[in-house]
Length: 283
Image 1 (cartoon, rainbow, N blue to C red):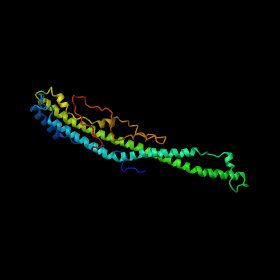
Image 2: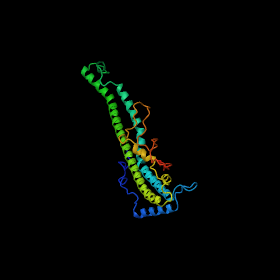
Image 3: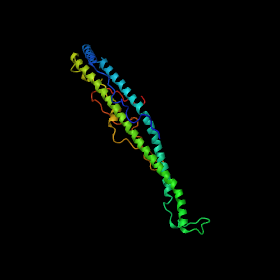
Image 4: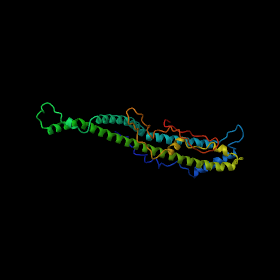
């Protein structure tokens, strides 16, 4: 059984990669843009006028691009592990079925022969002592049964190894997903710092600063659903692989597979908040 290279856990730089800097130059630029938009009356509350500001749209698109980049980095990191795990998900039931067949053959063969079977004589053993005959029959019986015992032990050890590897891959995938989710949370926290700095100066210059809150909230970036799904997963249940005890039984789906979760996600409860959309593993 082969392991993909470099899948012991998240990449060393995954958690410590620096976030985009937000220094004083960028902060002063946001303040200046907020005052300019406020003097221009953006966002406008008049019917038929734009309800947002180009600056908030720029923040939104920048965050969206960074989220897609993080999702792509995560998919490239866990894709080899998903492939190895899918192969194990197919091999584990097959190995279980082979083990069941060997055990069924062993069950049909008694561990020890009874006295009548030990006393059976072959050609040329008419005058052979009884104890010698019994020893010969016992050796012949052991020669038939021993290969099956060894084969059952080999399959059981192989099955245990595959289950351990399956669970290890699930734990590693889970860790990588949590690292990716945390990075997106950090990106969201940083972009909201920019949004807060921009809006604080915008409302001071806008002629209707006390009434533009809903229009601004509608353009706030939202954490995608796959981040919430990764955070809500059970960290103590990486999965131990399909458990089929009867040939042909259905196997359990591999844990840690790419998220197509139907778990409800949560986000800011502002009116008409536009979701970023959850980047799928295919994006």
